[in-house]
Structures are given as C-alpha cells and as structure tokens.
Amino acid sequence: MATWEEFAGHAPRIAETFVRRHAATGNLCMLATLRSDGFPRISPMEPRFFEGRLWLIGMPGTTKFADLHRDPRFCLHTATVDTRAAEGDAKLFGTVRHDPDQRLHRRFTEALYARTGFDIRDRQFEHFYEADITGASSVELHDGRLDIRIWKPGRPERIVTKP
Image 1 (cartoon, one colour):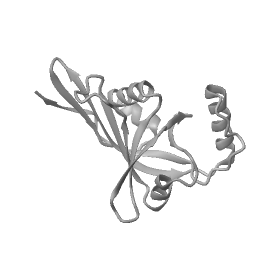
Image 2 (tube, rainbow, N blue to C red):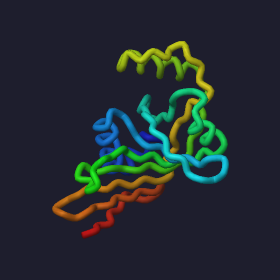
Image 3 (cartoon, helix red, strand yellow):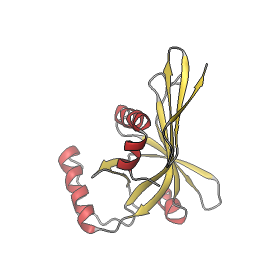
C-alpha cells in the first residue's frame, strides 16, 4: 500500500493524469464501494489532497461511508463524459483507514475554508478516511492509439498500447 505522496513518486504519469482530470471536473470523482449485500455501489465524491495524502471525506451518515466502514476497499475513478477518453482518465484502487487525529481534522478544515470558503471547521468527523493505494491505472489517447498505464506497489508503471 502507498500513501498518495508515495504513489505519485512511483507512478508519476498516472498520478498526473488523476490530478489533471480531478481538477478538470471540479474535484468530482466516482467512488466504488461494496454494499452490505456484496453488490457494488457507485457514488459521487470530491476527494481532497492534503499534507501529501489523499482523503475521502464527505457528508456524514452517507451509505458510501457505511460501506467503507464495513469493508475498506474502494475504487476511485476520475469523472469523464468523453467516450474516447481524449483528455485521459485514471482509476485508483485501495483501502481506506480512519485517522482520528483531531489536530489533523482542524488543519484540514482550516485549509479547506481558506481555499474554498466552505466552513466545516466545527464539525466532528466519524469517518476521516485516508486512501492507501494498492493499484492504479490511467488511459490516454496518443496518435490514435490508447495507452493504458498500470501500476502496482513494488513495480514501475507499465504501458499496454491498444490500436
């Protein structure tokens, strides 16, 4: 498993595609979790980068966080509406881990407020999830072919090209 910062150091092209597409959609991604009956759930989410880590934090009481509490595995996909993926897209696979550090929560909410004006500084977090990345992939269109980059811990990025 890797923190965001570790992952970005080992898989810089996939990380760059993820960051670029994440920003292009106003931070919107699609989060896949597992429901209590074992079926997948897809939910919109706005993951945040903070202090070199990727955080999955959101509205309390939502089913996606109940899913992650029960089973920490996830897939996070940059939202795309382009069927040709001309701008690329990326997926991250991993598990989440709750960080109960109240000082971290305060720093995060202060930084979020300073950056966006969204004020959750007095909120208590039941789920403050850091993403541990266990794999990733991205696709980019180059000269009419699709380059698929794949990363797993302990290995460099590799490319599979489709015509």
